[in-house]
Image (tube, rainbow, N blue to C red):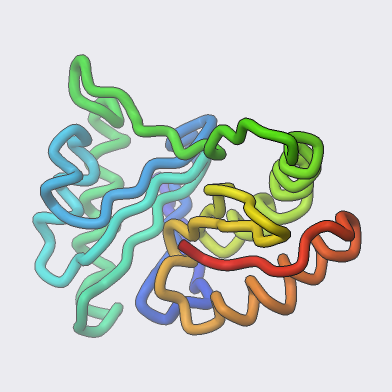
Length: 185
């Protein structure tokens, strides 16, 4: 089994591509070892000294480090991912499912605007963000402000503010004149 690695815009996060589906659809975010209890792979990764976060995408795993050099962390991470897939273990323990990250529901008079925002996020933004090892989901809309939640390598990334303001905000404002600002939650 060959696992590719890719750098992400976040220097504290590395993307691992096992060449097999990870989540298939959706994503799952584990911000600490307690959240990882339902996933054997996430537990194994958090058992490695220096791992601060784990994120599962459709066909990749991103790992965020607390400290240390990737040269020291990468071999045990590769080993844990390889062992998991070679054993054919499930991604989640029996009875435990993924908290698949989906857009928040929105009721109200702004339903058409929110539908357009979600469509643009799904077709234009999320695929690009996944290339960088992360995900972005809609959290809310009020008075022209779109609230988004960054996950995976995007959470805590030094360039995330620029991506939100110069990329996503400009895109949404171009296609949806009612959008005046984008904020991270």
